[in-house]
Length: 332
Image (tube, rainbow, N blue to C red):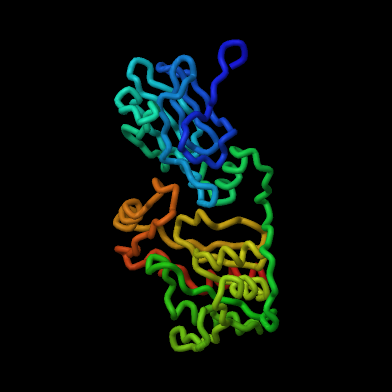
């Protein structure tokens, strides 16, 4: 603050921070001032800008993933209440009562939100549903990074020979809530063969995989590197909304994603298409909300619980093989 005071904006000692030099939003509030830095902790200060409390739940180590929904978009206060509000990029409003927070050993209080409100539906109605490219672009803007998400930058690979005329199928995911029937996969494979192409299913093991009554030969990719090589070499990929399918899109391979109604990880590039299922029922939505762990930023030592779908993954059942084949034919 030129001419008035100079303070260490990051005096919250002992708090690890990925971007200790960056300041995001600053606000004049009743207790003095509040700001967030680009490491995503929020600092609350007195009238002389000396930190008196810090919200450090959102701090992450240098080698840990950040969570886009903790980016603070605005800091403001409710005059006369002692409450400071933070609003993040994904429509989450937090209220902090700093005066009710006991001081820590170093005199700086460790603040926690007194309450949290989420306005995801209202946010999406106002600005539209954000896809992963939109989210990453906003994160990079906050960090001052010049990044281009309008086209993929492929991983280095050694394309496996012999797959040039093969459509690779990614049929497995991390749970029954993403499930397309064996009969549907078999029907799609038959359609692919009718075009004069081969159909393979990517697996980690050697044996052929039989889907429905129609055996589909496997292409083995026992390691992540092998998977990248396979997904780079093939003619096209059709897969569930899961990691291998997203890698195929990143490699520039023509890719069709079979997704639930919420397809946040689909990237709308010229070589990609998405086919979405019906909206999840209320029980599925409630179970997913209860399962979510967006409040965890540091994932060190964290193991997600096994996830089950109360509706048995029926949201994908209505996607017809002909619909997926049409999306694929548009690419090959």
